Amino acid sequence: MAQVRPFARRVSQAVAKRIPVKPVRSKLTRAVASLSFDDVPRSATMAGAEAMEAAGLRGTYYVCGGHTGATFEGLEQHDLADLRRLRDAGHEIGCHTFAHQDATVVREADRQRDHNSNLSFAAEALAGHVPATFAYPYGSTSIRSKMFYSSRFLVCRGVLAGLNAGVIDFAELRAVGLESHRGFDPVRLADLVAEARERAGWLVFFTHDVSPDPSPFGCRREELESVIGALADAAIEVLPIKDAAARVLAG
Image (cartoon, rainbow, N blue to C red; front, side, top):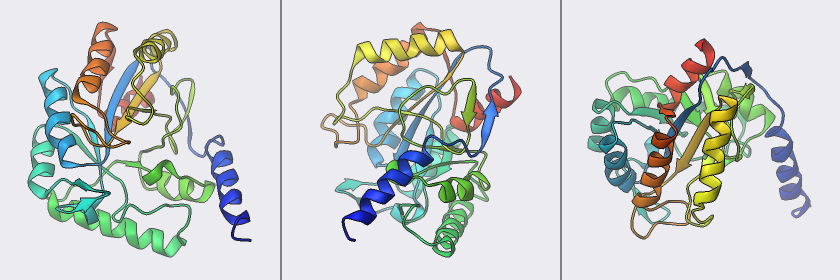
């Protein structure tokens, strides 16, 4: 049984990622893009924000309140001053649960308690701030977790690679990982940008740390700058996820 349960969970997650829970018909007439950072290692608040701000852009930072001022998976995380500076600079502060919990392996009551904890953290740390968007830790989703979070946030982001176009599942946006373990592929980037322009789609990128020697789930600053440059060359507007979602809804 110990071997069956993880397999069954993987199958359940694979199915959930392909079943729209909050389908929205996109009203975009031109492509848009978003850049997002999960967990929010301190390097993302520094090098990541600097790269975007140098280009006049703002991103989305998915925060776990329980990691503020701490170390997670060997990486120094953001502190309160980092979050306040990001907010004041116009970046979006989103929700990534309080304790970085896998939403597919906790009970509904525990999920709600964790959700309440992160809302309380955001309100206290950022003067009443209420996160509008959510990203699933580990990219783990189930039908139940998608229903839970999509009823509490405007839009939720996953990690299933691809472009958001046509009918978009606001319960689990597709996203493209900028992660060192995948390797940076300029040709793939060019193809994605071209597809987004052709289909008037929403292209969402995510990473974690931004450093010269990134973790397996982070990227180098020059790689992030390559993405920013490719989007600029294609005249694709870059918006925080909550603003891009509003554009999808309104056109």
